Amino acid sequence: MSGAARSVLVTGAASGIGYGIATLFARAGDHVAMLDRDQPKVEQAASQLRSEGGEVLPVAVDVRDAGSIRAAVEQAVRQHGRLDVAVSNAGVYPNTPVLEMDEDEWDLVLDTNLKGTYLVCRAAARQMVEQNKRASPGQGGKICAIASGAHQSARVGAAHYCASKAGLGAQDQRQRRLAWLRRRRRATRRLRRLSGGDQSDDPVGSIGPAGGHRAGGLFRLLG
Ligand SMILES: NC(=O)c1ccc[n+]([C@@H]2O[C@H](COP(=O)([O-])OP(=O)(O)OC[C@H]3O[C@@H](n4cnc5c(N)ncnc54)[C@H](O)[C@@H]3O)[C@@H](O)[C@H]2O)c1
Image (cartoon, rainbow, N blue to C red):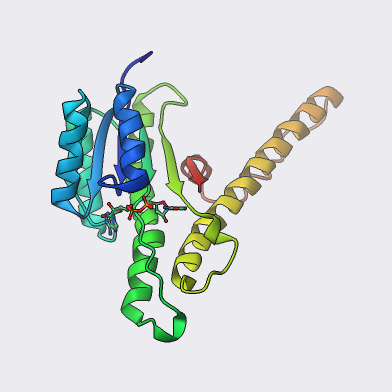
């Protein structure tokens, strides 16, 4: 591995894609906090990575619970010093047609996939914004949320799942628009500099509260 070990947090790290992501970071020499609601399974997964020499920390967490997420981020920072990368991956995808689905199942999917991602990203971004005040510019951190192709198309039995991933997709659309506006602002400034005109207009600054873009710009969706 080249450079210093990064401190990484992955949710839903006990199995599947989350375990794969945690494995790749651990093998690259990074320090990984592995969060999952299934405590025995995440401890077993962490032992496996430790046996390969990985520096990993298993934490039992339900991503639907803001308090337990906050505590897990604090634990990761105590153990690994800071937080450089957060991957919001935990998700559920039961398959039930709408007419047979009860409200509890709808809530489980939306709370885990959509609200859980918001809670994880918020807790990670707060830590990153804090540590960025003490670090050189650009060292705040990176946040990634695992989306799905289901955010673009309805699927029988997956109305709740598609809705939850579409919610993540909507964040992505906003980030793309912000990135486009930033590029346009830079181009406008360059043009104004070349023509010697006024440089005060800031189209991005009018979109959200100060600092909002910086945290928002951390979000990146995959899937
Ligand atoms: N598998 C696919 O083909 C596929 C495709 C596109 C997107 N995704 C997305 O990738 C992510 C991972 O999918 P996977 O197939 O690896 O799933 P998986 O079921 O193998 O693993 C999900 C993990 O998340 C954990 N988890 C579930 N609810 C949780 C909660 N409330 N708090 C903490 N942990 C919780 C589970 O215990 C499990 O270990 C999901 O967000 C899913 O929507 C998967």
